[in-house]
Image (cartoon, rainbow, N blue to C red; front, side, top):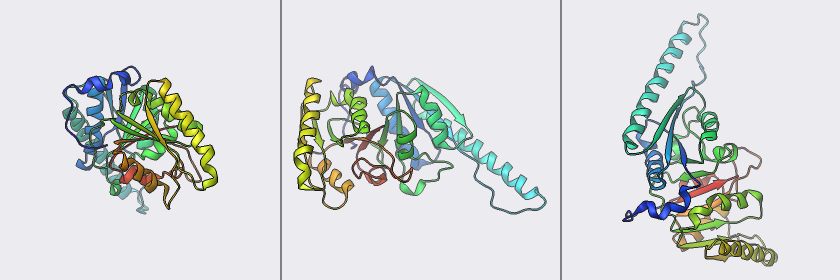
Length: 292
């Protein structure tokens, strides 16, 4: 995702996606550092002429203090609850100011953000996540994009930490022969229809894998062609870190979005498609579209 000049008619580029994405969902926080997420979500909702649901969710953190009388604990809980209420009001005000020209809904909950967002996902076609720096990862107040991709049951558009405007002009499809990768391409199909350039990439670890991988990306490219999407394909060798490898090829074609499947491994927060970890979500300069 890159910050570029707006088109003369931004909505026209997203016409195919409008039928599929009628409602977007975004977790809203009051801090300025989280504003890029909201701004990106509002911009996309405007381009799609979609309804944007704003969600404020924050959970009371555990009380670490030991107080035999219970008085200090009660005072602390009261103060923390008041902070949560104030944060919710500030988030609502920020949401109203950022979405004044859009159709919107507002929901607030005292809950872990990941749980509240996954519950509200039943009302949305697409979740917009990310858009905040690494240092703001407090699961009592922050919603983990990787966990969302695994748990929400909806596709997740992860915007870069600095935000930006989704153009979907050039896309890289990170292919791995899994259900998750196939689902991601299906869910992103409407935006790929408007892309000027699509590249299907499967990263291989051994040269002996090249023939089979090449057949797979050719098949995917041919499938895209039947949907009137012209695409190229690549089967590069893994050189070190898979995240860096995929980012390198995305940079080569100046892609503003990476399409990938998300699936869990040994830890819930550590997910990958062929090695794409949370680093892709937290340090990328472009969008990542994730589906499971």
